[in-house]
Length: 159
Ligand SMILES: [Zn+2]
Image (cartoon, rainbow, N blue to C red; front, side, top):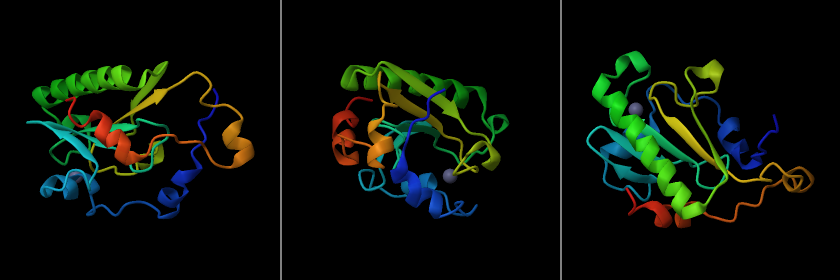
C-alpha cells in the first residue's frame, strides 16, 4: 500500500498525546464558535468537524456529540445516526470535491493511532488518483490546494 505523505502533521505529532481531560471536540461543542473550532455541522446526536491536521484535502471527522470512547458506550440510535452522517458526509465530499475514492475509519485506542482516544471519531479522507505521487517526497511538503477555511465554506451549508 502506498503511503499518503502528510508532513504538516508534524506539529500535531510532536505535541504528543492529548491529555485525557482535554477533548477538543467537547471543548468546541461546549461553545458557539463553530467556525473557529472547525465544527461544520452538529445534529441531535452527531457532529462533523474538519481535521485541523488533515491527511488530505477534505479530511472530515464524524463524532458523537457525547464524549464516548468505545463503541459499547453508544446506544443503537447513536450508532445508526453516526453511520447516516458518515454517508451524508461522503455524499457531500463527492459532490463538492469529486474524489476518486475514500478512506473511512476509526482508530480505537492510542496504539491504533487514536489522537483523541476518549472521544470516538470516524475519519473520512477523500482520495484522488495520484495523490500519493512523488511531489511530496521530493519537496518534503505536499501541495494542499485548499485551506481549511475554504473547505469549511465549501461544505458548511450542505448538511
Ligand atoms: Zn469529548
